[in-house]
Length: 311
Ligand SMILES: Nc1ncnc2c1ncn2[C@@H]1O[C@H](COP(=O)(O)OP(=O)(O)OP(=O)(O)O)[C@@H](O)[C@H]1O
Ligand SMILES: [Mg+2]
Image (cartoon, rainbow, N blue to C red; front, side, top):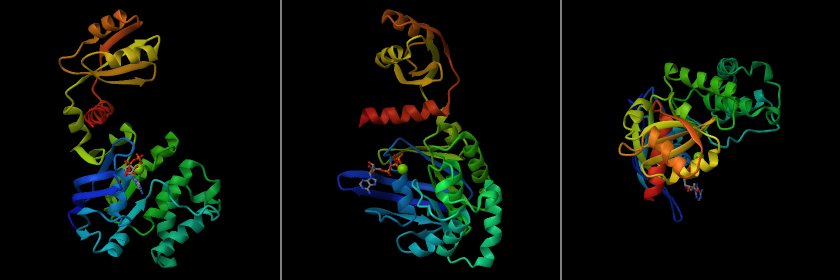
């Protein structure tokens, strides 16, 4: 296969007035697990639909394994697996029947798909549920079935659009275990996720905001590029404290993390003691402010907020 699993050049798509994707240049190397992260409406799904040939670009081009998606749509579909954000399972069919249906879609002879199907059922832990109707599956099981259906034809490139949204933590871990194993089978993965802890597991990340690719790098790169620093503090009245912190000069982001508040401050912004003093001055009770370890979640939030302020 081509060394680049995915390559886009100036890829652009609008829906009426809305510019969903504005000149995307993206390269994903063969064997990578590449994460596409960004807030709602950033253009993640649009990117995947363009890559799968379901949408036509207004401008620019996309290649999968060296094949132009518009010119070679049928060939691209054969070597691509796509798990859309809303997966169209056949609810009245069983798990086994759904898998068969997708195998038929890809014209895989029965004899050939049995082994693949068994492998995937066992990897997802669904072997004993093959007779269960799809509409009786839990959210996590449904996503596992969707993943099986998108892998049944042994694709070279797999597009996963928020496959773990609304899935319980155990199923989320199971799904990731399978995703992790894919590069060893020579499958390249492009996955979108709203979760920073999942973004952390990708080899590289692209952060998309308002149809523009803001930054690309390893999760470590993105953390290292952060210019602001995190502080954690405790407040009795979280909501009051949050409002006060959002107004405080030098504070870039404010987030609630469990019982604590986590803020990031610019280099020239306040330190922990000054933050406590400022809150005290605003009549908000807060304690235990201290510098914290930088995290990917801070960096992703800061990028999204910075773009929100510009736009
Ligand atoms: N078929 C469509 N018709 C009109 N507007 C659309 C259509 N598809 C997407 N959009 C708009 O294009 C923009 C990008 O949408 P897209 O679905 O690609 O974002 P996303 O990053 O996948 O968001 P989410 O995290 O909510 O899934 C949004 O403003 C969306 O409303
Ligand atoms: Mg989407």
